[in-house]
Image 1 (cartoon, rainbow, N blue to C red):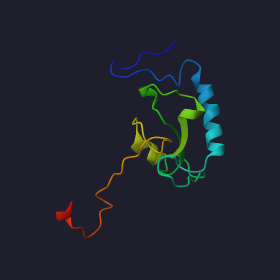
Image 2: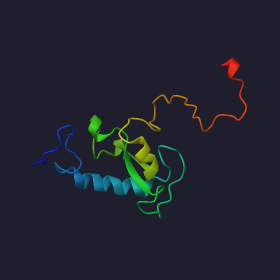
Image 3: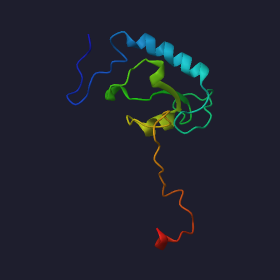
Image 4: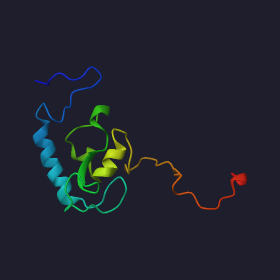
Length: 118
């Protein structure tokens, strides 16, 4: 039985209904076979442990609260802890076949730029 959730929150299906064992198995497989963070594209150092920001975590590509499958291998990817936290429950990252919009961050702007031509 699924325990009651808060009024604005759906219960986590990955921790109930028999999904936890499947998730743990899929998590071990992801950690054993993948080396690159699927969100930022940089290598993941698996020797770093939680709560280090660059420690390895397994991210749900389509979040569980947006009807993503909690333990399906095709919905799981390796990610840094900080990348996974920044992604939060948004659908995004480096999803194969998805159009990635070009975003210019204010931290990456050139030091000199002719704003009149924009």
